[in-house]
Length: 67
Image 1: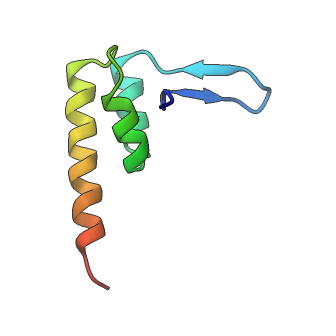
Image 2 (image 1 turned 30 degrees about the horizontal axis):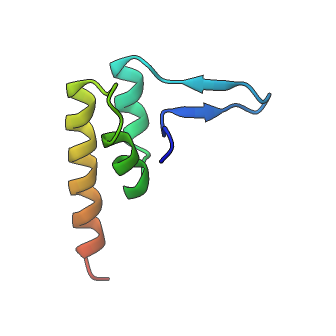
């Protein structure tokens, strides 16, 4: 399990989103695996957990849609 809120920038530095707003913005681009990894973290704010749950429901509905 990795922390999906930590990103490596082009210059090699690592950046972690720690504010609620930054994390919620990051969640909008997460896939299922990243959402599950984020839910396993202890340091996730309740509002971020809600955003992750919404994202998981969205991804689940999206995967059920037939072309």
